[in-house]
Length: 614
Image 1 (cartoon, rainbow, N blue to C red):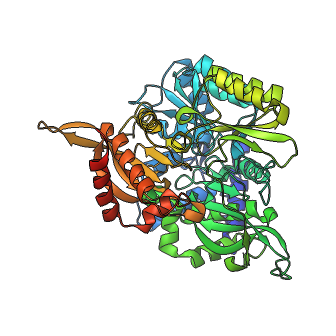
Image 2 (cartoon, one colour):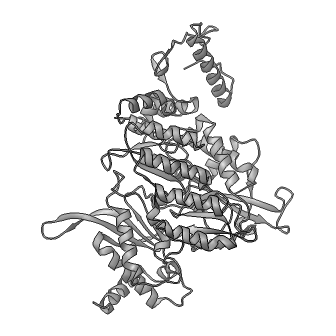
Image 3 (cartoon, helix red, strand yellow):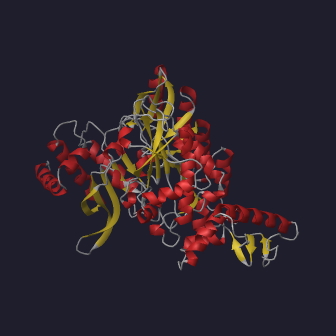
């Protein structure tokens, strides 16, 4: 390491080390003497090669803040996990030449390079598919129609001819060959879509409300904040290579939620009224800060008691990230998410460290004195809805488990440019909105959507259907989640009529990309033994009673190890029991499930089975 005299703060030492290292690299490239080691200290051997810089024979891959965090772990007797060692040896943000070489020779990465390529948005997803998946970064989930059309063309030329909308209001391209990975990245950059850091140990796509700027009930627009956060991250290399992936979301009180309470950092807009305002916190719109959401690990983000002005949010998120970088677990990937640091330290200790990173005081304010936005609307992402702008509407388009062909993407782009505001708005519910549609053009847009083989209206089942990629494209998944989701929807649509949507989430593995724990009904894939020969078939553990926002809660297990072909009938029994036993049509499914015990629900479902016609 470069020697820094004592008497400096850690922040000053980091700056000086980075400055001196940069100066030495520049001088070494020009065959000039290096400066470090001068002034009586031992000289440092710095060499420059095609793969990067080395100090005393050791690779310098990481930014100083990460290297120092790893060094503290090692000094304390810890052993870096394989991914941390890979980042220590090679900075994944500096692998462009290697990626180009792989593309030129039509080779997929091997070993730890499979992990490192994810930092550039390329996932080699073998054995599910011997191909890349490319994940984009679309802050707030909102992009221009011409960008959407450009992605469609990239999917046609270099991928499988389709795109998937994800549960982070993002897009993924699949079936990308080894020679096509770099062309896809170049094409995205040409479109103004920079997806660096969309995978690996980075801040993932920053989410916001898809109706930001057009929603009649929103307290504040969140798209500007999502974009600010997105560009801040892209322009601070030291915020890449975290102990583990990290999610940030902003919710401005719109009718369509951003599910901010399921994120590592969630900012939720509230209003401080005149009678509750103080000199330190005048009346206005603020964001409450919540931390530690990771529903796949059975935890929602918890309120910290901190209130941030819109202008403070990015700085606060930056401070949180820097504390996480410095103190997150670098030895055990299963315990490396922010939640586990919060569990170990407690909120007060963590927030004290965050405060040290800030130039302004964190503002404490009682939740009871905040006016919250109206609840989100479960139907607001589907169908025609008026915007805050008079005479304009947005149309929510139903997508079959989030998948769109290139031709459908181009058709939607055409509709947006001809009849809307040239904007495509992706949602966390794996669908999209066409906004800025004048009253007189609504019917034309509806007909255009139908002509593309899509729809703008949906049953209460299909409108709440969420599914991850499944084993057709993910090596971790234990079942064909998208295929099974469609089977469930087709089966139920002819048999069950509901006044409000019921969210059914199918996820393929413990990573819980489809967030099965927050669904009204959640399914997580497993292998199930059937028959006398103990054959293994795809199946699910089934959970009920999850929710978010005002109905926040982790679903409880209802039945384990259900073969996939039995799931539609089991869900039908559950929903029939709900319809028969609810107190009124106004009682939602989650309210019903939480009112009775799981054992009672099972008993009533068995009774429902006996009463069902053959």
